[in-house]
Image: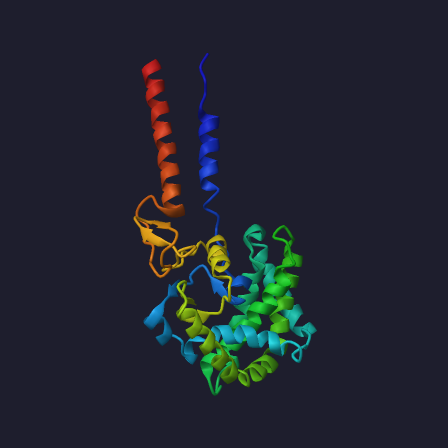
Length: 293
């Protein structure tokens, strides 16, 4: 009796490919200072002198906008207008129905909302701070609505959430931008002390896209969340004050090293190894079949 290995091969291939899930487009990461990050973000741990030099106001904009948004939410409580949600819903559903399974509620909401930031910040005293305030408002409102809507929801529900998020952000934008503008100086002063203190620690301070991230005591969790959400490898990070050698880290050493992984190290290397093994398995089956013929 001939034994077919095709089912086993298919299972092995499927198992290997499960690790290649598409990362989230963008999200507010609570463990990473509650700032908005995305799959394109570049994050690194900095230590000592070069780190302290990075602790300057221009690098606190993202963190401050995230914190100031929360502080201003109590006074910026406008609701979305019917005109905004009605217009948005029609456009959104037309987009969603093209491929409902791939429609991303939060991404659609952010696209609608972020697109207005340039116009909102024309003539602003500090354009960078204004844009950061605008984007933090969009991110918070969009995530607040879309996170409560399951991916399995129909286009009507997804678009209702997306449009409510972007329209609520629009209704509160002027209030948020004005309110946040009064708090940047104090926030930057507070963060400078925290940033310099983090730089003096063995584990160092985290920066993403050049912006300081106030992780508090959650550096390990933040790094893990960046990996799981966006498949981001944080440069210069070594878990548990580790020393890096040959792509591996061992405990009881400085965390300020940068672990450069060679081929075969880390998740990408593991995936390549798995797929290579599967390919070899398939070739072996082919040879065995030819030998029997």
